[in-house]
Amino acid sequence: MNISIVGSGYVGTTIAACLADFGHEVTNIDIDETVVEKINAGKTPIHEPGLEDLVAEHGGNRLRATTDYAAVRETAVTFLALPTPSTDSGSIDTSIIETSTRSLADALADKEESHLVVIKSTVIPGTTEEVLLPILDATATEETTRHQVAVNPEFLREGSAISDFKDPDKIVLGTDTTESHQRLTSVFEPFLAESDTAVVETGIREAEMIKYANNVFLSTKISLINELGNVCKEYAVDAYEVADAIGLDDRICERFLQSGVGWGGSCFPKDTKAFVAAARDAGYEPSLVEAAIEVNDKQPVRLLNLLEAHVDPGGNRIAVLGLAFKPGTDDIRNSRALPTIEGLRERGAEITAYDPVAAENMRERFPEIEYAESAREALADAHGAVVVTDWDEFAALDEEFDRMADPVVVDGRRVITRRNGIVYEGLTW
Ligand code: UDX
Image (cartoon, rainbow, N blue to C red; front, top):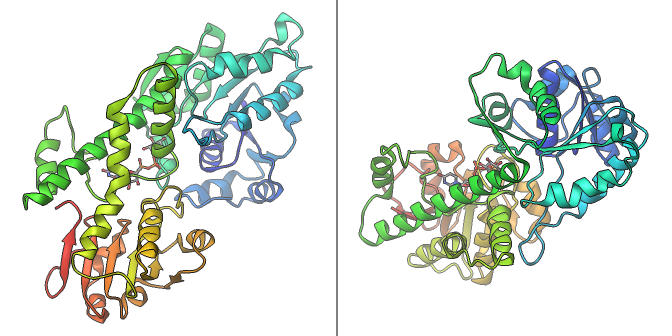
């Protein structure tokens, strides 16, 4: 099948490469010339494990990229994988997807066969039918050129996006006609033929809400275990043992029960805020989700309070280990390292930060702090260290702590294994 995908970010590039790997002819559309050139040359524009090999294999062949929306006319389905960033009030800004849908509508105006536009972007229920469909309909002239819309939310985690796409927990297909349902199903046919993945066939509004409900549930789950962890800490109880035990209850399950410095990234913070804004717009005060956000905001402050109990950051060198919002990515969006660094700066600390891949991104945000080439270098002569990201390499740190001026380590992710000869504090245990 000929498929077009608008957007070459984390989601768009991953889907484009995976659909090409399933045997589809895929055209990726992006306004950024450099990204387009890279994909056509078989090079990936983003860092994502496994993506390089797929783009190297299919880029320039079954996977092509262009800046020209006219390419959608040669395809039967277009996926819209563009961002819906937060506004100041926390609601979503739909201007990027609206502009793109206008370009799509213009390009599709003289296409005779009907076209299916699938929304991958995270949108509040009603957006696809009430905002995007009217834009598409505006250029449709006859019944034959009426366009169909569908919603197929993505649940890809950065750092494991390829395996999440190829082995998902579920695929959600939100459609409103038999024709759009059949066409969308045939996109996934090569994959579904060999997989027993659950397919959720639902309406458009339900599919839009499933994405929010999923992310709001998971982020609230993490905030709940963080709250439990904070209380565990007060009572000298190991929160991880508690989490392991309650995780055995299959109504709770052990996944997403790691307490620590909190959740970051591009989805949970944005989606919880948008959910709160949408609920308020509808006249409902979602106090539980608001509390989950509040717990998350407070975790980095607790981390710094713990550090201060042992060493005054003012005028002292503090190492920040880990800058990415989670391991396996160079993405620093809403990383807990941001409030941690801000808090350390307010307290007058001299900061040396280290991350195996995210330092360059952080340097753009905080050019004034120091960046080390290794954890060893970051710890040298430091009076304290805070661990913000659970990179595996931090578990192997040992004699590196002996190089510190004061060996005080506050671990926000339960990754450090050494205990002897250092002042070790877990954030929630
Ligand atoms: C998330 C969703 O999982 C994905 O389905 C959605 O489509 C996009 O948002 P992602 O942001 O890539 O994916 O990261 P994820 O692995 O879910 O982690 C999010 C944050 O929660 C990270 O900061 C992580 O460190 C934190 N986290 C996760 C915890 O603090 N504890 C946990 O137990 C799990």
